[in-house]
Structure formats: C-alpha cells, structure tokens
Image 1 (cartoon, rainbow, N blue to C red):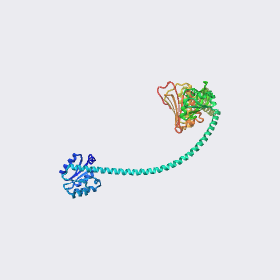
Image 2: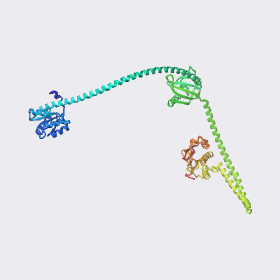
Image 3: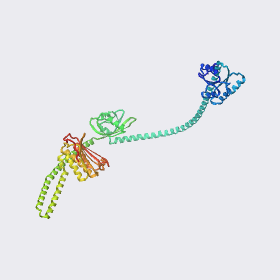
Image 4: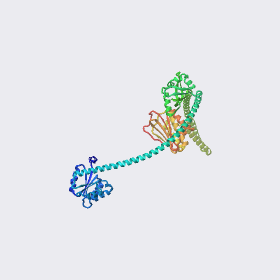
Length: 550
C-alpha cells in the first residue's frame, strides 16, 4: 500500500456520479481537502459527456441511478475509445456477491458500499490511480521500446548497407590507389626528364640573357639587393660582377621612392611597362631609363624581373623637338602678324588710293555725260562706263573689307556687326548678333585674332553646316570675355574631324593659343555646333547697359 501511495499523482481529477446531492456534498468536500480535483455528474448522460470532455483519472460511479443505472453507464464508458481506459469504482448500498460480479463484468475495477468511508475510498482510489499510472508508464515504455527496436533495426539495416558500400569503396579505392601509384611513378619519371630538360633550358636561357643587348636584372623583393644581372646591365649601371650581389638597389634610383613606386605599379597592374625613371650609377652620374618590371619568383624567392633601356638620347631629342615646335609656333605667330599687317596695308592702299582713283574716274565720267547730252549714241556708252565704274568701286570695297574690315579699326563690336551683316547678305542665312557686354579694351592683335576665329567659324558654317540660323554672342563671365558662335546645322564629330585635314579648326586653335585664349568646340552629328572662345581681360570700358543687336 505504501508503494502504491508513493505512485499517487500529486493532483488527480475525479468524476463523481451520483443523483443524491447529500452524498455528493460529503464526498466532494472530503476529496477536495485531500487535494483531489473533483468533477460532478448527476446522471448517466452527464457522466458520459463529462468523462469525454474532461478525461478524469478516476470515476466514482453510483450504481442505483434513475434511468440508466451505473452498470450500463460503465459499459458505455468502456465501449467509448476516449473513456475506456479510465478506472471506474462503483458505489452502492448493496454488498451482495452478484452485484459485485456484475460490476466487475461491466468494467469496474473496485466496489465500495454506502455510506462511504472516506479513508477507505481514498485508499482504494490511490491504489487504482497508482495502478493506472504504472499502466500508462508501461504503455509509454513499451512504445518507447518498440520505437527503439524499430530504430535499431533501421540502424542495423543502414549499417549493413554502409558496410557493404564501405567494402565496395575500399575495393575501388584500393584499385584507384594502385592506378595512382602507377601514375605517380610515371609522373616522377616525367618530372625527372622535365627537370633535366629544364636545366638545359635554363643554361640556354642564361646564355641568351647574357648575349641580350637589353640590360636585364633580377632583384629581391624581400630586401633591396640584386639576385642576378647580365653584362649589359652591369655596364649600364657601372657595377662589377663581384659588386652586384652587395649593391643596395635603393641607391640606383635618383629618387628615394623610385623602387617602391615601380614595385607598387607592378603589383597593381601586373606589369610595369616602359616607365621613365631617373637612375643613378655607382659613380653618381644619372640618366633616364625606360624600365619594364614584372613580379615573379627566382630560386623560390619573390623577385622582380627588370629590363632597362637608356633613354638619355631620346630625352635629348624630345627636348630638341619641343624647342623646335615652340620656335615654329613663334614663327607662325610672327608670320600671322606680318600677314595681318600686310592685309591691313593692302586694304588701306586699295581703299585710299584705288578708291580715290575710281572716285575721280566716276566724276570725270559724270562730267563727260553732261557734255555729251546732245549725242545720244555716245551718251549710252558713257552710262555704261559709269555703271562699270560703280561696280568696280563696290568690288574694291568688298576686297578691302575681306582683307581687313574697316570696322575693325573702330573696335571688335563694330567688326562683328559688319561680319554678321555681310554673312547674312552673302549666304542668305539669318545671323543674329547678341551683345551682353560692352566694347572690350583689347589691343589690335587680340581683337584681330578673335575676329578671325569668329570669321573662320562662320565660313565653316556656310560651307558645311547646312544651317538655317546662326547666333554670335559676346558676354562676360568668370572666364573673362567669351565669344560663342552657334548654329542649328548638321553638326559633326570633333574627334573624327581632328584626324582629317581640318586646317581650319587647327588654325582657330592656334590663333586662340597665341593670344592666351581657350577654344572649345561642342558638336555632335545632327545636333548643331557651338564654337566658344574665352580670353581673360581686365574690366575695361563697357556701355552703361547691356544691349542686343541683330
């Protein structure tokens, strides 16, 4: 009994079924005081419903109830799967053997008589609750054991399969090892033959390197020392064969960071090609060398392979070429200035001398016309001569203006006004001049150069742009004086134009460079063109207010 008491659950739910409230009150109070959770049902239907819903650990069932008695109620409980495992103890006033046998046959586990004795009822309840707990424990253990047996059988099956697979893999691995061993022997033999060939190749390579006209050396990356150098490198750097292994490579660079920069460039780009470096010989003399470097290994040591070409003569030639180019530019500027002066002189002579002669001729023809008023035949000839003189005067003025516009003597603004008007008359393309700045204070050379750039731009528009509108704008901004020539024509590719014989664009760029101005051409096929030239000028004379002229 003590063993069963030890197995009693701490809190058990008991369903009491009795139609007598007085009996219920005594039992409920007594069981509640002993820690049981008590549920009550007054008839068979309520008992079955509560048992299904609450699943109590034990049922105290009165035998004598109206309607369905306790035995039939028990049979129904045992026939229902959710409630068939709940132990049932009958309570009755009869203590005959027949009633006890019928109760056990109905499925009950014990039998108490009324009036009930609480201690006896509690003792019997504890026994059956403990037995139910042990039964449930046995069921759980049996299920666990069955699961363990199933898992073990599955594991044994897997183990057997794994063992078979392992034996197969061992056999295959053994075969593979045998083949690998044969391959390894063949590879070792091939490697020995390759090493022999490599030694021969290295000997030949060393001979080639020694005979190479290019100075070559191999330097260590771990420390600044030479691992190998050919005779040409030693002669170039002024190092003897005995000294080459003890030379500090940093001393061979005229700049302290020279070696480090070459190594970093080779690491980033994989190879440093034709990098101009100022080098120093052991005797202290310096020279420019084009260095090619690549990172690799030499005798299992990180190293840098270096080739050097003496660039001293090339540098001298490049410097001479730059000086010659600058002299040519200066000569070009001088010749351009002479041409402008010659144009100016010829324009003045044509305008002053030839113009005066033609004007005098025109006056003489007019006098002759007055005297020949009575001779109709001669008068017709004189009128023809007068028209011819008029055309000649206009042609002379046109030639003089194109050599050098007379308006340019009165300032850049006047010259631009004449150029825009003349362009519109000659080409039939409307040209609008927009002035957002007053007359700048420029010397004649600068004003002439700016005028020629604008003139060349408009000539290109007339020849190639197929434009229907042209704008010439002069303004001031942070860059100084800015002249823009824009059109709505077909445009072009400036990069492609630079590869052809585009002497007009080249001449514009050169004129801008000679006066310290910057020229920019923005264009693309199908989007028109904008030519912009800007020149720094001091704040010179400007009008009191900006004006637009067209």
